[in-house]
Image (cartoon, rainbow over all chains, first blue to last red; front, side, top):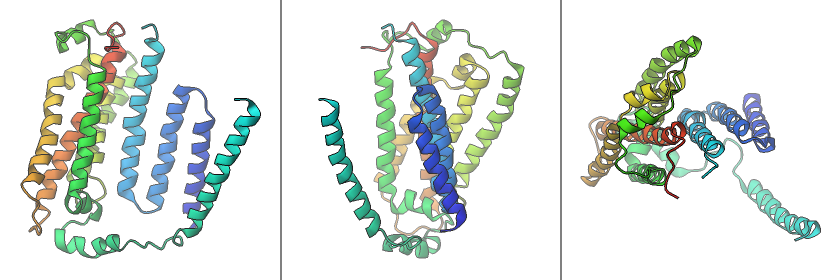
Length: 80
Length: 237
């Protein structure tokens, strides 16, 4: 394992821990996108660019948008 | 259940999980020593057999095309599920009515509008590039499709709901999603040829997947956005 791979793994561990420790859903959604970015770097460092791209678009675009929309809906539409 | 009992239950579960994790980590192959015969076989033969330089795409759209069909169907089913869950009370309420009722959320910051104006075409182009070159370099229909939909979403972020809705009419996206899924199905139904002169059907499948994924993502975003900009409209209980 080269140092770059070790650094990427540590970054993923760090980012994942912060996501778990954060209690506010909105900040959690943003931190989760940062966590996805560290995973993208991890896959790139481990020479899987296709998986890295998938991770980037799912973790950086699709999932945060759905999460943010759901959070906005729960916060605004709680009077049903 | 009191605190002591909960901790006892957790301790038992954690001990079991730890034991299983340690056992599986010990049994893992050494770092960097891939043992899958199938993967090595594909790496040796895919480029010569399928004339693509991206073996991942060759696997996804040809050798394992049937799996991809299943994944497309999952996406299709998920979007249909979301559309059903978030459907509006009155079926008669059409797109124009949604536009009329929507809050005025125009973005007035010049800085955000300019950044959006620059980012949107760049992202769109990058998405097209990812799809088009998916057989040559890393990328493909799925990644490019999500990026294409994301570039349309930038219009909402930088301009507001109305420009976004004008750019992505729902019936167009509905049609594209259905056709994307149907196309992939029909094509595989007619039989995947064993040997192709070039990447042949993979190019078509790649683009069909891109259309399907883009439309599915746009539909998902639109459904969520409509319930976001229309606080008065609620889904059925």
